[in-house]
Image 1 (cartoon, protein in one colour):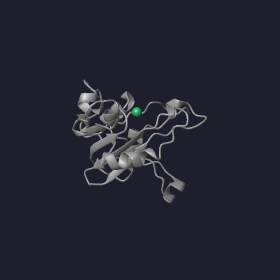
Image 2: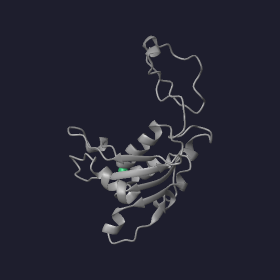
Image 3: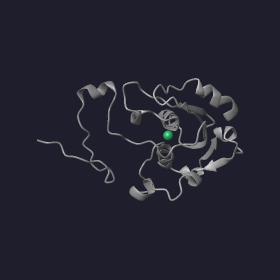
Image 4: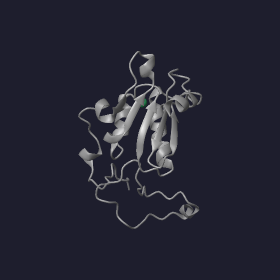
Amino acid sequence: MEDLLIPSAMHRVRPPISRFPVGAVGLGESGRVYVGVNLDFLGAPLSQAVHAEQFLIANVAAVGEPVLRIIAVSHMPCDHCRQFLQEIRGAAGIRILVTSDAADGCAAEWRTLASLLPRPFGPHDLLPKDAPLVLEPHDSRLDASSRGRNHRPRTTPPPPWMHRSCKRQQ
Ligand SMILES: [Zn+2]
C-alpha cells in the first residue's frame, strides 16, 4: 500500500509556508483506502495548517468508516497528530508505518500508537466510556438541511457529558 499510495499522495500536498510535504494513506476496516496530505494556507499562521494525518482522519470520518486499521505516513507523526490519533477508539491497535525510515537509514517497521505516545492522555481520562469519539456517529445538534432555515432549537437536553463552556449574555 505504502509503496504505491504515498508517492501518489505526495503529489497533492500544499505546504507553501513550511515547504515540508507530508502524505498519509490509511486502510479502514471496510477495505477502503483513504488519503491525507498536509496543507498550509498563505496568509494564515502555520499553526492553522492541516496535517496529513488529521486530513486522513477527517476523510475517514466523513464517510462513516468506523475503524482505521493501518496508517502509512511519509514522515514521523508530530506530537499533535499522535494525540489526534489517540482520540480514536481503539487507537492502540492502529498500526503505523513511517516510510521515511528507509531514507533515514532505519529498517521499516510497523509501530503502534502506544509506542509513539507512551502514557497517553485521552478520552478515557475525560469522558464516559460510551461517549462517541471521532469516528463514531454522534449528534452535533447542528442541522445543515434545508429544514434548518427555520431552525428551532431541539427540546431535548444535551447529554450530561456535553459541557457548555459559556453562557449567552442576556
Ligand atoms: Zn502532525
